[in-house]
Length: 65
Image (cartoon, rainbow, N blue to C red; front, side, top):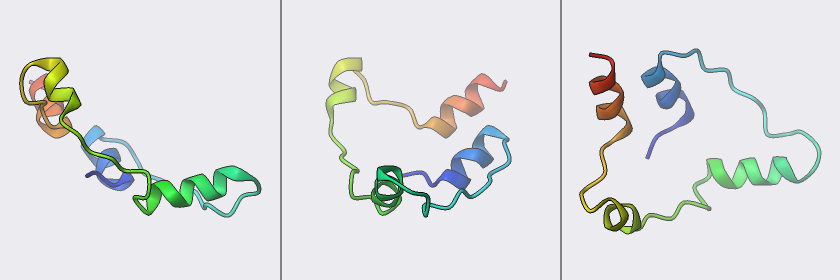
């Protein structure tokens, strides 16, 4: 699982933290996402591809060459 800072670093982008304290449902949803409550992992992608999926980092490194 990737954190937002790790993803930004892998993409070579600056990461800026945005607080989840804004009004409305987005604050609740952002808290759920950050806490991993909505995370679900399955083998569906591998079945669709017919091969194991690549990690984001390995794909980024391969495309940078």
